[in-house]
Length: 115
Length: 408
Image (cartoon, rainbow over all chains, first blue to last red; front, side):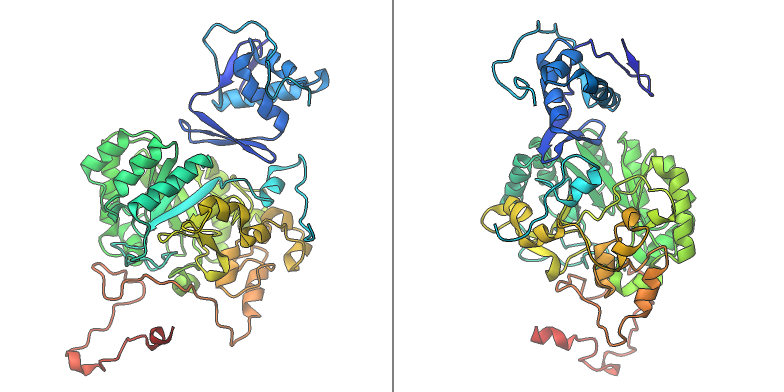
């Protein structure tokens, strides 16, 4: 299922994603700031769980898998998918072209425990 | 802990989070020098002459190292005229090499073709050319004769070099408020982006604020213009005091002083905001133990600024949530209480407050003034031409001497 964004950038939650290479992420008490050095745009990740999801993207075969691995319940899933779609539209996250890793459990890290 | 420190709320709006401050500034202004080739009448930092205590190249590099550690994504570099510092281009490269992007403001004096090409080839650099009139006539009255030509030559060089997304930075005044469309057209002509900001009564701006700040009618026109053109025009956090006209404008609708912004001045002093160069808003110095990070995270002044306002006349106003009482610096330098209305409050409370000031009130002045002591080539004409005595002895040798400076 692809969610089409306003500017034609489609976000496919079943595809593999990562924080864009030109984007820096800075943790803050409320979540994080993300800044794109290519678009010069600043965005905000408004919860620590969303920060965990974004940081976990690169380690999962799909965005959906990253969301699930961070302990986001079914009722909250749509909210997180929409947030990721917004980040894709503003080029803060980008689709990975590398072969996605098979689903695996991270030995340690922010998403090994449900928040 | 005995002090009552308000707890940061969990979740909610970002603006409420920003009130409590961040681990590092979002947007940091760094003025590299007080030296400037111009003598703009409204200079927010009263620049002109270099300060002998200016940070050395090594000290400036150490600040950049620290900003990298704190993940300050970019700095707004200004002055003075930053490009007159001989190590400016080195520091620019140094910052970019350390993942600190640079946006710098210049009057264009050093942006010849070669520099324009160098900038066009460099990632992570943004350039803002200051222009305060869409015509030479309007611009040069406040920025000085020839400054329009210098700025537009720099714009041409940048456009020819293929530089993208450079900015034309305009301070809105009573004299140029009618030129917004012309500024947009001029900016479009160079393939640049327009950035407009608010005139503050800071630095020499205090001397001309009464004469140059937009009228109430112009503020309304400005608001309407921003609503119509806001998406393509940058404003930073300049115009949140206009939000009570109706819908909130794009940008940060909050005073960010000490919360999400601050200033590092040429000698390393850290102030709450670029418009607040005054001892009351001085939080520390990057040369102090612990450096900039300690000032940002632990200074008593910044802790105080990160406490949400709960009292004062404005908190009882229906529009408080829209404008948050306006600009701290604008209030301070016009002698108004910081918890009261902005002098340009669009509900008219500012004018009332200004009129109610004690007649004997002396408005606060900065302890710093680096203005050129003598005449400057192409001096702005807004304040009238300086009187030139027919013979040097027609005037007392003590005329113009500021006797107060001797007893400081």
